[in-house]
Image (cartoon, rainbow over all chains, first blue to last red; front, side, top):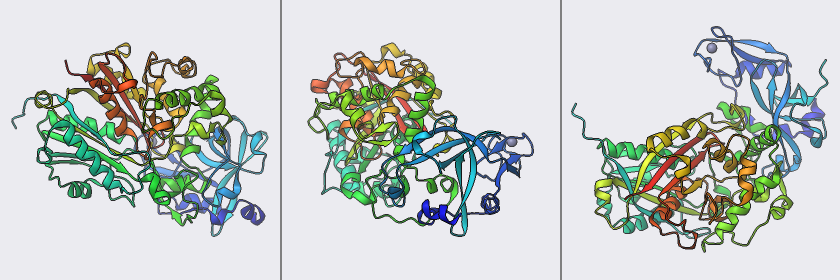
Length: 143
Length: 402
Ligand SMILES: [Zn+2]
């Protein structure tokens, strides 16, 4: 994981500041889990973490998602003046549609950027960023 | 409570500051210059302004309403600092119209200024915070930590262009839209810029030039992206009754509606559909006109895809048919739907939040003051602003007073 973290310059990125609402999400990644919120009233799963359900206003509870999804849309970024991304181009900036319903922004990594398509199956790949862990995704064959 | 009679509102004054590159003006300087010109245009006096509207922006701007009103010497009895990104001025137009209609103010100023081009690294654009800045900005910027919803997007190296690229890619996937079709939009804006001596770029541009320019974020090329300029604008709105006694031909605000769908790009519910689809029908209904009645369209063009989505969502063509719609020169001056007749953000002027320039160009057209870019006999214009990352859309229909 450390090699990958260095390759992705994770500690040089602007990193998240966990708060009382999001801490469970970041704590989950630290143990390799993708934790999402689900509404106890309407059963809707949501991402990013929020104090209440954005669909109905109900209370939310946490659950562990599969980490599987597919690329909903993406771009291959070929120019970015901000480091460390200037050193990382070309890289894939993508919206992943998770099996549980919500979508996440991420980078699809460990692949040829030119090979990514809308519909490409992907799997969560947590990568360390200092004391935090970021949720990246890697192309995966669907079992 | 006794309610005042509802009053119709008209645009009585417009002013542009200088653009595209003005190293000696600060953001507030642009606002002051545009305001002075709008006052002179209308024949009104500063003391007449009793409603103040500007789009509060992120630090380090001090362009929040209270500071800017103080600098311009205005003592408003109605103030509004709504920020929705580049569409804020269409949203403020709605708010100003309502405030005038309700009698809460008589004469409203909407004002904007930005030294985004000349300030370089300190620039922030539409919805911008440093990591979302244009890729050629902020080369020495070093990040720290990010909280809130952005904490789930910023670490992955998105910026404004890559966010719009997500929409363009999805539109191509769903509807078969091509890079050449998107390029037609940039080509039309450049053609229109040829009529505007102040435009940043005026040399003719071809589809081959656009698709042959550097890919920034697939499928968006360099010429699919707007310019970064300096600039400012001011619009003075008053009652139609009063506007009819002033120096300029009144332009009536027939309707102004807006709709938001998300703020952060990862939360966009449908990457091929903007809030314009949620408010366009209401705008036409309130104005009592149809799409066929619109003589000229001034539409936010941060990127070519921004125009394509709005053309569809405003209902000028069906969803998915935008690519074919733009491919026969309709958007050019002299075309069937002359659009961004000043050259737009793609070729003329985009200091970060372009929405006010849409209103000003529409008014020039409806007054018959657009020179070589004039749409003959223009009586109705539609304005559509997109703010944030295709997040909050504001539309308005303006009509030349009879
Ligand atoms: Zn719920």
